[in-house]
Image 1: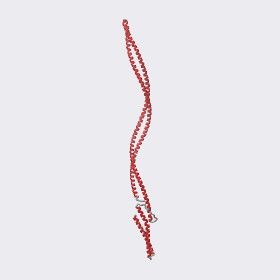
Image 2: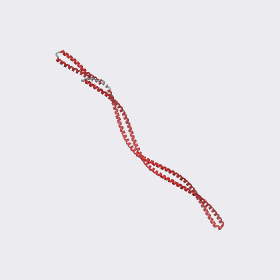
Image 3: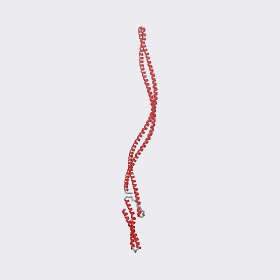
Image 4: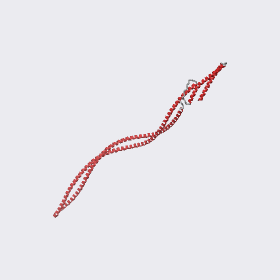
Length: 420
């Protein structure tokens, strides 16, 4: 570039000198035509022509070469990266002036361009650095998200398995609740039957109390009658004792009569027969009274035993009355308890029916949750795959941003060579 401008400068000077020389020759030719007779004048004119040509050449050379020299110097500075040079002012409208103005505009344009490029490079560098940091964080975050989503996918799969197990348990619970409902229905029926039986038992207990009281009264009456019978037996014993005494006396009288009949001889034989019969009758009466006495003794013993047994039975009946009354009270309490239990069972049955309905709804919800969980597990796997792809993309972006950062660094290093 420097040699080219130097050659241009020399060519311009030669061109200007040649032009001046040609003008002088033409002028001299004209003078020679008009003043051919005067050689001195020719010499003077020739000398003046030479002086004018030299002056004109020097003037034209300076006028043309100085702007070109300045342009060359500025271009040399610009080629070395120095754009701090001042613009060259000129008002000329010729080619050197136009060239100088064009150079000034080019210098300003390049200076603004380099300044803008530096600013843009700084901005791009800062942006690239921030993007680099952000992309690193994004890559790390995407990696963490991928890990989290992978864990979430595993957790979702476990939740799906748990949801399936929960669904199975809820199904079993639903069956159990339905079985409980059926059992409660049977229990309600049994409770109603128990209530009816308790009412019947209470009625029977009250009737038994009345019957036992009647039996107690009957036993008391029988005991009194047996006591009276014992008293009658005692009185009969006294009468039998009297008869026994009479029989003994009769036997004694019969003996005396036999003795007297024996004394009387033939006249007392009939009386002896009568006495003998009386004796036999007295002996039979004695034997009969002994048997009666023995029977009365046995009757008195049996009566005494019976009275003792009856008294014991009456006491036992009285105890039985107390026990049956207690049983009646217990049956009344059982009846009240059964009534309360029946009401509670009916409430529980109603609640269990509602629980059956709720259990059916829960079963449907569990089925929906299980389905949703399975879909979520599939979606989590898809999301995990997508996030892994995004993580790989983020890593590629991070690598690209790092390359861009290096390029911008190199660009800044190149731009630092330009002084603006």
